[in-house]
Length: 230
Image (cartoon, rainbow, N blue to C red; front, side, top):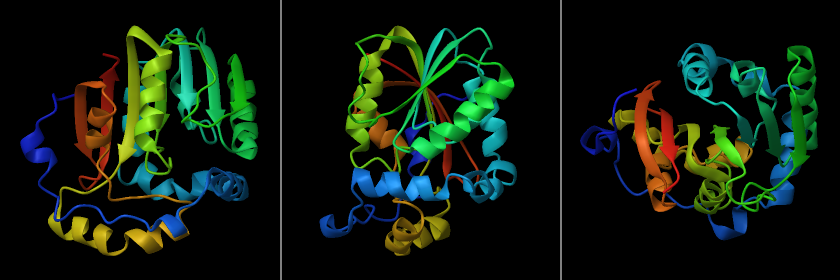
């Protein structure tokens, strides 16, 4: 992975990302219901991003770095489980029990030791420094308070451990970034609270994590990020 370079990371910015009106923001309960509803067909929704924009390849490269005690935050249907070492002790949390059920089925087929729990990423019920690696993919865009969720990931990751994030946000391609800005609200409504024009690197730095490396791909919208606790 290349070292982060801020001069190129920002070139798709055309204006500050529009805010979703407070009255229209989805609550945790609404997000839970939305993801329960789409759990069975969730992976089909991701097909284009996974196989055309390169998410699957970068997911494998990034998640293969996890080891030891692993926490997968907002694990969804368990797509990251395919790349964790079979000897790892894995915990997975999500707001959606139906998502967790699908993830547990995957773990059983893979013969992985997996503990699942319905939990809010912004209030992780784990002690400080509990995990060697904390992972999350395509999630900060939907957390009501993504900075708080990232602070929690840092808290539960041991010093010297890794925080591995695969995220999407504002494109580096100007016309695409403008399209995201113009359509941020309908996209939010139609895609279970996804804010697709935010900047994951800004959020991670605001949460106080140290970014060790960051690679941009997929029309400049996706980021594969290795961070560590400070």
